[in-house]
Image (cartoon, rainbow, N blue to C red; front, side, top):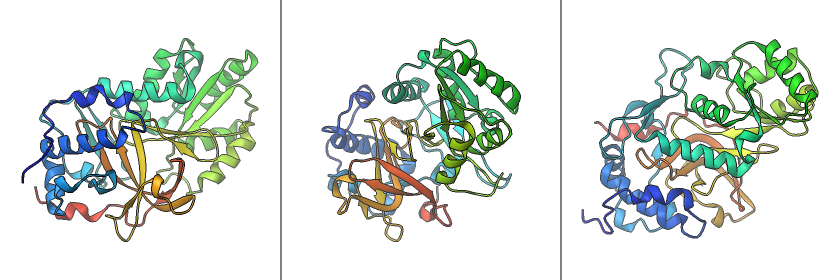
Length: 341
């Protein structure tokens, strides 16, 4: 197949964090062509679903790789030796883990640093605390690396992780509240619920950031129920949330009510559950919002795949904010059956 506008190099990497709404689509299409040319797994998937890349002229027409491919294939754009391989958690030993082969760890650092500063300012202004036991017990968690780097950037000596030492975390929070020290507590959902139940406290100078994650440890409850409980037990007006995953190098943040916003180099689209190739952007919402399954464009994924069809149900608003509504049934997409590599 003749490919027009051949992308010869990785100049894209210099552009992603300076991208604007006006040139996002053009940059995404350039990146699609680059990844089609240099990512064997993605190219074979595109060929399996009969994509003519010369006809991909809008981001809705870009093929989105089912996220389950990260469990079964090495999703790499260009050959390289990885700086690090991020791995997802599995609920049992029989569950395959997603693996994200990261060519350049500095791209990830730039992504989460720029994103955090966009939504929360410089990390040095905060005491950064982590209640992330299930992630700390893994050696290759992208979330742990991010929070650890934010702790290093913090000017507060009390910035630290707390495995299961809820009492020590409570004392640190009390200390910071007494001295009115701005504090950011990252917490996996089940651990935050446990802590809040055992140590109710009134937090006036602390942002509570839930990162998701029940993983079968507790009866599943909705994000709204989680937030109401944490608000009542911890005395916070709003609970913040972070939306990220092993397969991404970028995150979205919510400052209230589970309404997320993306940095400029990340975009959410919605696909129909019964027709995964019918993809809709926020600009084409007929009403104020549309509900379906979340597709993500993450331009920071230069050397893996920037176009991912997730297993999450979501609601996308016309202003590009979005909500995560839960997982789809039988969430491992069937796309992998299209490939035999």
